Length: 404
Ligand code: PMP
Image (cartoon, rainbow, N blue to C red):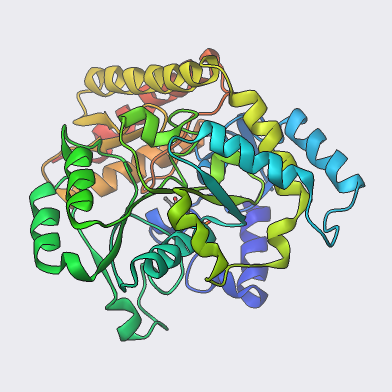
């Protein structure tokens, strides 16, 4: 990875986002792990790094890509929109038609508002709920972005701000009910990822919904990752649970920057009172990309395919692990698949995951050791079969390197 390594050195000197880390993949890797950081191009199911290595990409822009990279229809729609001016001072009809489309498509959505990033959307949803309920405390679960109310790292954030948000435990309905019994009158909203890796236990989401209803608290689903990924109606339709607001981004526009908050009119009308604006919220490219992406996701077939590709990967990984006698099992929903090692020793499991991902990388499969993966519609059955074949060899490496 000679070209990439030299580029990383230059980046560290002038690009502050590389301070203390080696890029988006660094979180799951230790010192000395040779991992590609820079990409030259991405197309369909594959990415090519700056050293010319090609990988089957299971990161898919961290879930922002669902059709495949550089989808010609989406790129064509964006290019056409650019020709008419990307920032045309006033509002575009495509903004209104996209709001109409979300109201038709997203369960419970009576109105929508558009922003650019996932953090924008979750922060707006929380602000709308705080304004609506005239309360400050937010109960949350999952990753919601980098803004003050929810950033994973505390540095630079006033303690008073952090104290207005509390994290609850996923799949612990009793804990949440008890917390709401104590503090329900102070809570502005419950905001959560409906699922990350481990699926909700039967009755958990229903219990969250019931507890929110009991205390008159809006329930916000952070569907930045699950929206248009699990189903056209997102986690709400997949799990059959209605939220009051949903946050959408990522798969909505196949990698282009746009996000949305959608939901109940009574809460959304608070847009009249809160601050939520950016010159870029009106940009033509996001609306064009979202329309072109949603055109392709309609009808059940795209979702049947996303799920069956993921199922084939998960089944193949399970078979390959058992053949290699490695204690590993697929985890997560097949559209957001992942793998967990189970040696009964967390340090060994982490080492095994790194060994496995590096062995896959050598065989042209890009995985993240600490973030679940994604399927996309540009993947083929042959791609998945190739990844499973690579996994057979990778598990053999794990079996000899990681002995309990
Ligand atoms: N919510 C969820 C569930 C996410 O996965 C992410 C991004 N990983 C965000 C919010 C924040 O989105 P962004 O990075 O676009 O600000």
